[in-house]
Image 1 (cartoon, rainbow, N blue to C red):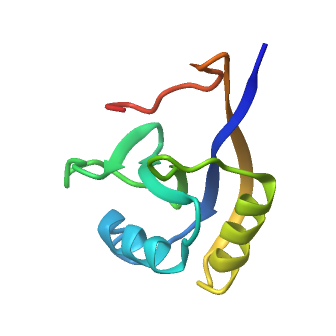
Image 2 (image 1 turned 135 degrees about the vertical axis):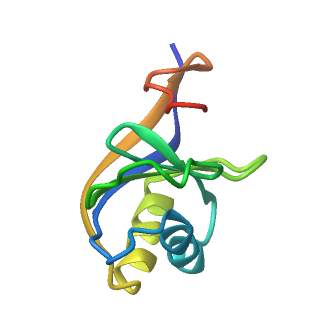
Length: 114
């Protein structure tokens, strides 16, 4: 069985007044570099970026999914580099979960609409 690291979910506590997922995405994208790209943001289990519904009620707990850029391999060093960049953003990341495939099959749950 081949186990391959393909990304990471980074969870944030972020309580900006309007809790605008587009603003959060822009902040994350400005600090994410290397092999990992922001793919999706969920809040309370509902996809809010990209293409979320404005009327979705949002809490201060966000899951931000970063996946390998097209044709890139992901290493643990890439995850550390991502977190280092995010540290400079001033956002409070509170948890991470690595995302793996096993023989090409995702070993993680897809987000709503993914």
